[in-house]
Amino acid sequence: MGIKVLKIEFSEPIHPIRGLEKYGKIRILVCYGGVPLKWVEIVNDPWQEIIPAERVRSTIVAQTGQELTQVILGQQLGLKTEANHLLPPISVVICTRDRTDLLKGALEAILAVDYPDREIIVIDNAPSNTSTAEFVARLPVRYVKEERPGLDWARNRGIAEASHEIVAFTDDDVRPDVGWLRGIAAGFADPEIMAVSGLVAPAELETEAQIQFELGYGGMLQYTHSFKVDGSKLSTRELLWSSAYGVGANMAFRVRVFAEVGNFDPALDVGTATRGGGDIEMFHRILAKGYSIFYDPRAFVWHIHRRSGEALSKQLMDNGRGFGAYLLTCDRNRTVSRLEIVYFAGVHWLGGWMLNKLRNPDWLPRKLLVNELLGALKSPFSYRKAQLQAQQLASVASPESQSVEQPVIVGGLQ
Image (tube, rainbow, N blue to C red; front, side, top):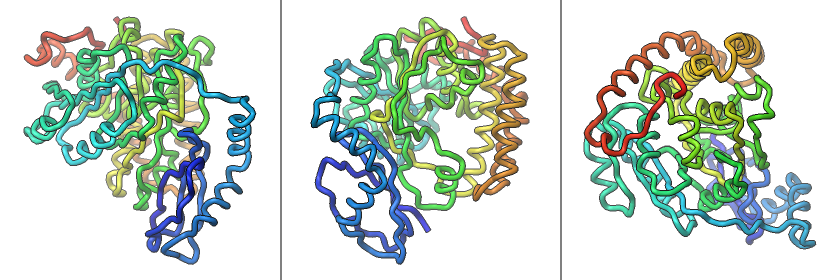
């Protein structure tokens, strides 16, 4: 039994929710003035096709009373006003490989984003056919082919191709909300901020695997409050848990920060043996240099979670492998001492996160968590293999890349 997912803007008229005969629950992201406030759940028991508008409204008020009161009174009394920040031009980079059908939905959503000055760049990463190029040719976006396989090669190519001082990254299985780029711009209103991330909401919870990932495993970034993270004030544990502050599906950077910390590490993430870690390693590296990042839920996107149990099982194994490779990169880059990394891995990651989940899995199947642990144990071997591949690819730049290439990291800081 699936869960219906939708967004409701409370400052606008509330309408009945229809088409619910196959759903036992409705999960609503309640927003006010475009700002996400809270997730609200309505139990559809007995299963009804329609839930009346009055029940929707009363349930929202009952579950978000404090949040709604604060934001409405704040606006009416003039205690909270929207900051008058600039809307700087933004380069939007979406990396893809052989998933033209998914890309169509992502580009449709990006083109509908409400923002006055932005460019859209599609990085086609080592494609096996021309379907993406043919599709993109019909749209007002820029197409770039990066022959070297690996998501971080594609991201680095996006940085090189970007025309603007802020570059925002997303994926082909993501559907940005209409206010996504305005939320990113708000995050960069503080000149100290070098990176911004935001809420990643589930686009659908139709299958058991999607529900398990979002509500059992924890999904991606789920905070509905904004916060600033100052890298110079973090403990070692907080610094190594950089996955709490940003995710590749929804991240943006000031381009100049890459001159200070280096580009994405091409020995990490999808398209390599490590299968992940490139995004959180970049957030970690920025914070380890003492810079600040910002999380703003207004910069939110909808992510299509894996629909099958088999795909989710593979994803969690990749998560374990990618996070282990990320820690090995931290050791290689000496952003944190080896002893502290070993302690973090044993006590906080393997002991605190994985073993606790295995002991108390709730309704998340243990076999999924075992796969994540197996991935972690494989990470040293995967990391070594990915490093060798990255070194080989770095020595032979693709013809399309030679004229615009920026320095890249292959397992270490420059």
